[in-house]
Structures are given as C-alpha cells and as structure tokens.
Image (cartoon, rainbow, N blue to C red):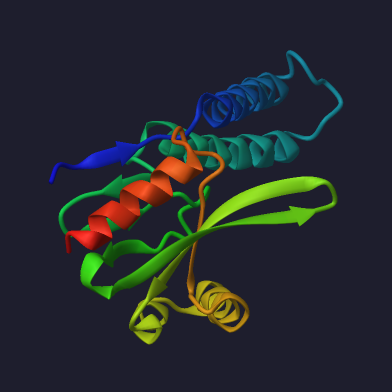
Length: 174
C-alpha cells in the first residue's frame, strides 16, 4: 500500500494566508510605531508587544500552511496533524489498534462540523500519551463518543465519505 497525504482544503489555506498577512501588517505597524513614523502618541512597549504577538501567531499559521500534511495514511496507520495549533494532534494511530471508523456531524448554532471518530481497542494507550488539557479532552471524548480519537475532517481536501471508505478498505487489509 502507498502513502496518502491529505492536505487542507483551499478555504483553510486561504484563511491561514490571510492571518499570516495580517500578522505581517501588525509587525510593520509595530515597527513604524516604535520609530514614531506611523503612531506618534502610542508607547513603544505597546508596539513591541504587538510585534511579539504577531510574530508568534504568524509563525504558528506559517507552520500550519507549510508544515506536514494534516492527515497521512500509510502502511503503519494514520498520522493525525489536523489540529490547528498542533496541541490536540493525536499523532500516529496504528492499524492494529483501530476497530472501526465513523463520520459524525456536529451541529451547533447552525454551524456544522464533520469529525471522524476512530475507535481503538486500547483507548487508554492513546490517552496515556498525553497530559493536561489534551488528556481531559480525550477523556471527555471517550466518555461521550466511546473513543478518544476525534479528528476534524471538514477542513481537508478530501470527501468525508471517500475518506471513511479509504480507511475502512485499509482496515480490511490490516
């Protein structure tokens, strides 16, 4: 079997690009503020804070835009890098651990979000690899959905039904 890398869809990539551009504008405005060219009545420390925050946020968005594939499917399993800030990425999910997959649509305030629930035979192993807020989030998912692995898929450049079929076909060959 070959390696399949699924990227973010164009809408998500455009959002990342816009955020990087806005961060760049904030950095430029902060530098001009420190030099007294653009903002003459603002303290320099506000400009420094603006630059600092903008560089950090811009770096995070650039990393997502040009970083690793959000979802990779290979012979060893699935690698989840779909979380926006990398904090909630699951990492590798081995084929031998996966029992089944299911697509779920969450509707909140007229906004629907598609998630893929990946059921595993040993959820405690995946929860044990985490700590802090990520651990509590995975424990809550396990309690509510029966699995700690909850991947957002509506921002990927792949049809959710086709993705579920692809993973199920790989599961049948494990």
